[in-house]
Image (cartoon, rainbow, N blue to C red; front, side, top):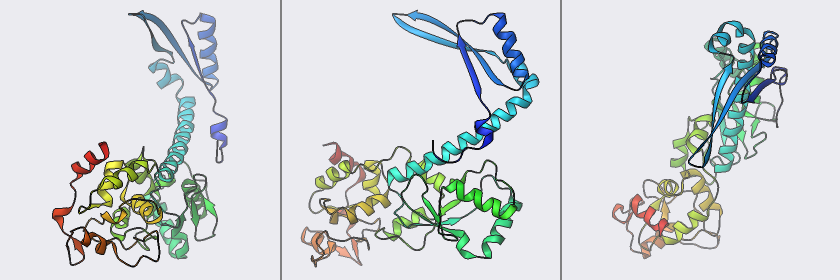
Length: 327
């Protein structure tokens, strides 16, 4: 398990005892231990055979809702607080893994500090004033490292999103942070645009925080085999967009554009354009000596360009792209 583990998490064991039934010696002992602030559940299990299949049913027999609400409130509140912290740590860690797996943010992408979860408005104002004293405190750069993906410009050290949020909270307030979800504190900065990302597609991400982006991309992976298959199937004289390609292969326009610009083996990469039908400013040929532009090549395939944009009638509809991939 990575990261630092607080005493609250390590010192709050929880026991769940599962059995077909519980004699009085067990229930009496569990009640007494619960009153000593140990967190214990008793779960009764029943087994049946239904049409040859084994079926299990589980019933919570202790604590009952009445006991849980009145008798065990202090211990349960402490346990729930510790469990919430663990859940927040897990959520933050999962968000980072989702973003790294999807390849959404290129290395060096800038993030902007916007304090949110876990800090009341009065403390947020204090943080903004503190950041105003040194502009470097408001910025971090991203690296595709699941352990510590943020490098804070104020000290040049690597952090997790929550670790850096906690550090900033403590620096401003002088007290320990409690329950901050740090992935909500860091927004994608619209400027500068990372190479070789298309500025139009990057602008779509601007202002979104890491937690939101991870939620949108959950289940996405950097498997480009379907992308290569789709690109190979795009016929001469037709074009598509980074966004449409991303939709079909369950990705996002930014990592698709980054991959096309750096892969060197993507077939028909010149047939993928921006949403407006223009050639991406980040496009580059695998062979640097190649002089013609993608617009030149598309022109030889019969696609007209007006004011730098390809003709709309030659753009492949999204459904046609899906059919190309299926076939």
